[in-house]
Structures are given as C-alpha cells and as structure tokens.
Length: 221
Length: 262
Image 1 (cartoon, each protein chain N blue to C red):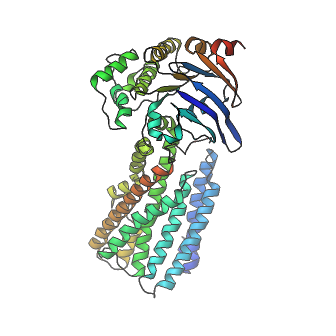
Image 2 (image 1 turned 90 degrees about the vertical axis):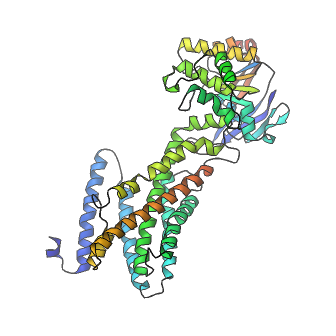
Image 3 (image 1 turned 180 degrees about the vertical axis):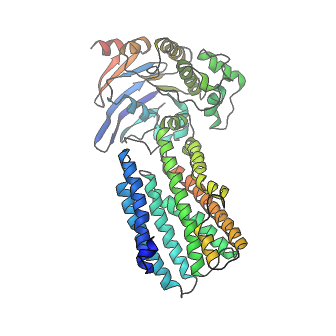
C-alpha cells in the first residue's frame, strides 16, 4: 500500500530523518515509536508531503508520490494530528471541509455515518467550541475519514487526552483499521498503546530506524 | 521659549528637532525600564528620518525649477525605499521586498497617477511630491502592518494551516483566514483617521493651505480629499500585498514555508 524508500530530510545543521525504509501493508497498523526528537513526527510529515524529503521517496500503491498532485496525495493519505485543530463553526462544517476542497458535497447520510463511526451520532449541528478534548479529537478523525483516505497517519492522537478519552479514541482507531480496512501509521511514545493497537512497530532513534518487526519482537528487544 | 533663544530659522529648527527627539527619548527610556528595548531602532530611525527629510528638502529645492515629470523619478525612488522599509516588518518571509514594492507601487502609485490625471493632485513638484509622499508613506505603514500581522498570525496558526493542507486544501485557501484578518487590521489606522477627521486630526497640509491663503472651506474639503486618497492607496496596497504574500509562504507543492525552527 505505502512504501518508504531511503526517506530522509535534513535542514541546515540538523538531521531530522535518514534512510527510512519500510512498508505499510493493507489493513495493518504500523506503530512508530521512539524518544522525543527521534524523528517520528518528521517521518509522518514526509509521508503526506507536508515536508519535502531531501533524500528517498514514498510510493503509494506502487506510484512515486511525487507523480501524484500534492492535494490529491493528501486526500488519499489522511492525517490526524496530536491536537484536533478544528475550524470555527459546527461539527458538520468541519466534516464538509475536505470534500469541498475538490468541489464535492458530503450528504447528510454520509455525515451521520462518519459521526457514527466515531461514536458522535447527532453531533453534526454542534459548535466545535463546545466539545470536550476527546470529542474534538474524534471529530478530527471523522473529518479525515470524510476524504475517504486510503492510508491514515496518526501523530500521537491521544497524547493530549485524559485516560477515558484516550480509550475512546483508541476504539475509533481499531474500528477504522478493522472495519474500514484503512492502514494506519501511528506515531506514539506510549509503548503499551503500540502493543494494544499495532501489528508491527518501527523504532526511531536520532532520526534513524534502529529496529523494525512485529510489535512483540521490536518492543521486547 | 525656543524662539526667544534662537533667532535664525535653521538654529530654531534644529533646537525644535532636539526637543522633540528628547520627548521620544523619554518614552524609549520608560519603555526600557519595562523591558521593551527600542533604543537602537528608534535612534537609527530618528537619525535616518532627519537626514532623509533634510536631503529631500534640499533636492526639492533643486527640482523646484525643473519640469513636472522629474517628480515621477522622486516618487518612484520613494516607493522603492518604502518597499525596503516595509519589508523589514516581515522578517523571515520570502519575497517580502518584492511584494512590498509591487504592492506600494500598485496601491499608492496608481492612485497618485489617477488623481494627478483627473486634476485632484496638482502637477507642480511642490504639490505632487508632498501629497504623493503622504500617500506612499501611509501605504508603507499599512503594508508593514499587513505583513507583520500576516506573519504573526501564520506562525501562531501553523497547526490549523497544516490541518487544512492535510485535508487537501490548496495553500491559498489554507492561509485565507489570516490574509483577511491582516487586511482588515492594516486598515484600522486609515479608517480611524478618516473617521476622526477634523475632530481629532488636522494634518499639516490643511494648516499649510490656510497659511498660504487658501479658503478655509476649500482647505477643509481638500483635507477630506487627502484622507480619502490615503485610504484608497493604503487599501489597494494592503489588498495587493496580502494577495501576493499568500503564494510566498507556500511552496509549489502546497507546503508551508514560514514556520519557526526550520
């Protein structure tokens, strides 16, 4: 589905990521773990080309992603950030944002289906200013799903949440992966979360991949 | 009091400049005690301002007897200098000088040309250059405010902008809310000047017209004309500037280029 080949990025006087090579298979969750500053978020930003790699590339379904228009690439490779960054307005406005960028309108039925998937049925007319942290993050998942992505990139999506909200969001990630068969790359610093959610893991240290394999193999090493 | 001490016009002018500079210095010292250090910037700005205005005054004196079209060169030089000054308010923004100069040229330049053509601004150098410089100076301030606000808003909303990009929005759409706010904020001084015209603010131009024998009603109407022209040129400058700067902060692949720590 997604393949990174020798992916790297450096900025003046700083190496962010070097020579990252890995595959993301259909329906799997790949956890990226490592200490702060190890290059986890830098890697994720390269996968949907929010940043430009200085070496290597990424292939999406066998096609070099530089051959895909960036806006189309980002529709196909969705992203959920650590903070939800909802746009002012209602929940429905937020879900409609992505499809509107390509001139499509989300139907009421599709809207409700997306909200049901994140356990927020009937939240559509609510003002996002009145949502809890967990609800806001689940809206950001539904917003990303509204674009019908083929891959989802999750950048520490539960790190700013309390324990209850964290479990709810983890449930959403499991449903997305299992019921919708959308492969996910999950950046997390929480090893137990990686064990709960991921099939495989990749450990980054100092911008380099130091281990990769099944979650059990990697995290018990 | 100064007039009793200084009798020559030049000496009096320098003494008045010194006293006014001391007032500004007092403000800088007060700000410095609160940890806001403007000493260097203000000292350079005041020294530059004094030298520049004396130099321009001297040049005007030389050009007074020349044909009207020579004022065009002076105004173009002012626009370039205004672009350079304004661009400094957009630290780290790629293409700020180019954007500022084009925006001021489009905004102030086109209004000066149009108004001169229609006879709203007189063509003699003594009228065209001072009035033109007022439009350029205000356009420069507006442009500086617009770019400065845009820069700080973009840096404060990187998450929102990159979220929009991640959802498939193009670069211009992603920063659109911040261009709109920057445009509105940059025009606050021009709108307030227009709103408070005659009540809070009477410019030197009106005083000069009265002193040179113009009828008070005409001087008052021309004051409105001047502020309306300032608003038009500033507004157009800000509009062009905010439209142009959108594409400067994004790469061709719709990646945000203006971010801290990159």
